[in-house]
Image (cartoon, rainbow, N blue to C red; front, side, top):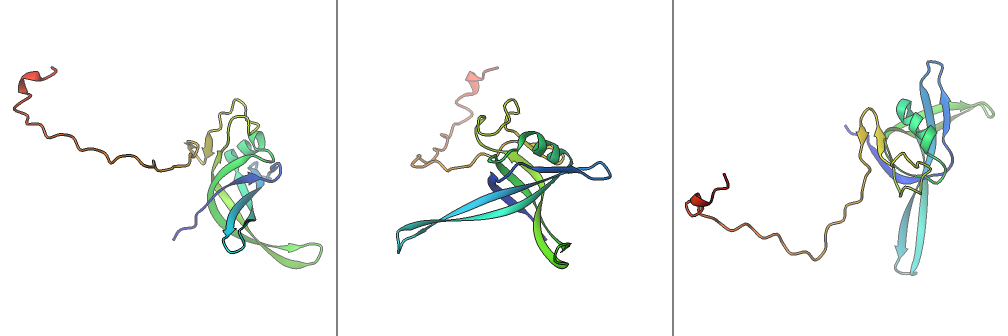
Length: 161
């Protein structure tokens, strides 16, 4: 079974950071992802923005606290986690879905995030990841040519060693 989420989006507010009683640092960020649609019938472009609640723990929470600010563009890999709680004001059960982050990469150019000197690399638990770069296949490039067939007996006298 697989429970994996990948998001690329913008942070909507500065991280909420707290330390639990056992000393574990936890940060929560809200990440907006936007899908763009084009309606051919009406010739209109529409956007749909979805907000995601992302929880970062330990080292990822430290990175969020130091480097992530409102407007930062981030790449998140994590797992969905449902939770329920009782609303103290209404005494009703509430439900929500969080993303428990395993990987955090800061995206954008060096001036886009308040991370001068940080380098924009990615942090994950427990190893460091390289920033994610979008891949685009080359267009209109010729097919690779195969190497010519060479008879080893012809080149026996021209060995480089």
